[in-house]
Length: 202
Image (cartoon, rainbow, N blue to C red; front, side, top):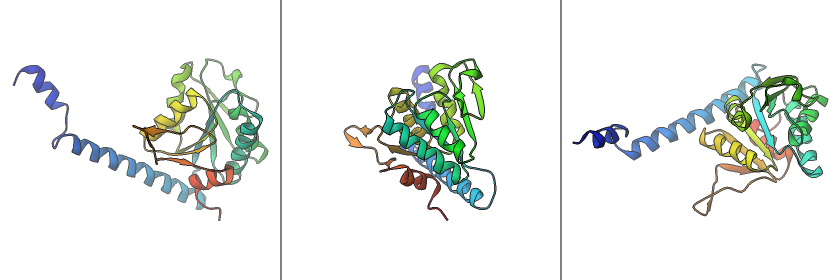
């Protein structure tokens, strides 16, 4: 076999594409199991679940209201809220969490912690621009998207690729070759979204 073909063949696992797809499916199952374990730890008084709330820096009043309520409900359930740290949906969700006594983390796109909204407890200045979206998604156990534009879409896509639970409220519809992606859960409101991530309140 010529060298080029040999290198290409070596890039595929034994059994071809089916084996690789099987590994992806197993990885997704492991991550979903990780979210279940994280929920259990919260119910037992252990380490908290980290939930990302993603959405636009500029949002409508209705999106701000939804984000505020999501933040409030997450804090009441003991989850840590992780977001991009700026305004709009991010600020509204942090405000809701803080008014309920919760903990908020803002992963900022720029180099200055002072850019964070006033409701962020722990500001992390990445100086990575939009690439910081990957840090947000990697940090959390699940994602709730409220409204949003292309930056939010990138966070939704990365979270789905990583096998993490994603719940959308008035956000993007995603289709693959014209078929809606069932991995993206849709919620009618904040209560349903939070329960989809943390389970029913006990």
